[in-house]
Length: 267
Ligand code: COA
Image (cartoon, rainbow, N blue to C red; front, side, top):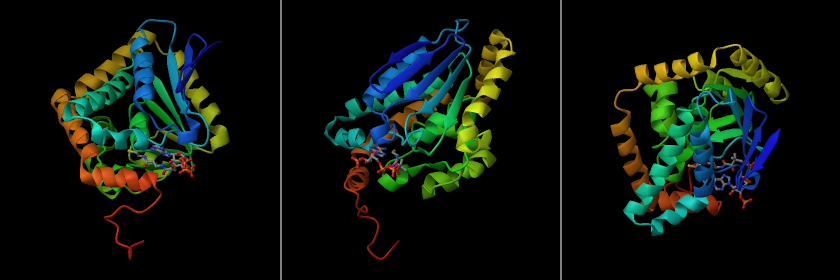
């Protein structure tokens, strides 16, 4: 098996099966510029009809992914609008490249999938999650937006669940995630590898070109105005990150204190 240790990713390639492991466990696999570049480069390198038949995305350490790196995002106040747009566009390109991967992508989720981590779950074709995983769209708690991930998340969970979960930022369970279509199978963490292996075996008996065509089919049938939506989301997050509220929310998180909009009396 070929192992490729990049700055923030570990890629284990055994030919038909590629394991892509988010590998910044100290910050709970939060992704920054570097992780985005590495994940995008990997996803865009996967060729249709190549040796790889299935990919599994997982996270090293305690959790799958804590979303975008708040330290990195909070520094964007010093960026110009154009620089923020460029940056949000790079993130959008990563999600799109994963969403359109020409082979099936299985998400192996444990611990937590928050913010952009939930977005990563949304671009997987099949998601298995440990029963004690905590999911949430926490962005509004930080004064920012689940913008770039929203087209992918909405395609999975629909507007109704998004209205509740995007606005409250509330944590939800793996069982709830399965009910709303974000997750396909839930089990105890020790069982996750066996559950993933079962999906890998099922996929191995499907015709590779037909599988790639089925993915394209779903995308074509379900998306219409994706380009205009992407432009809107890029501008929306670029603005929120540098807004006073966004900066306050992210600084408060990093300083481990409540943000200014939470009054001292509320819990
Ligand atoms: N960006 C940057 N750093 C992050 C991070 C993020 N999204 N999520 C966690 N970290 C950092 C913490 O600041 C902490 O750093 P420190 O060791 O320097 O204090 C470290 O990762 C460990 O986090 P901690 O909260 O102590 O770990 P935990 O295992 O108790 O909890 C989470 C893990 C993921 C549940 C928790 O970190 C969390 O809720 N993170 C917020 C995620 C979020 O809101 N993401 C959305 C961003 S848009």
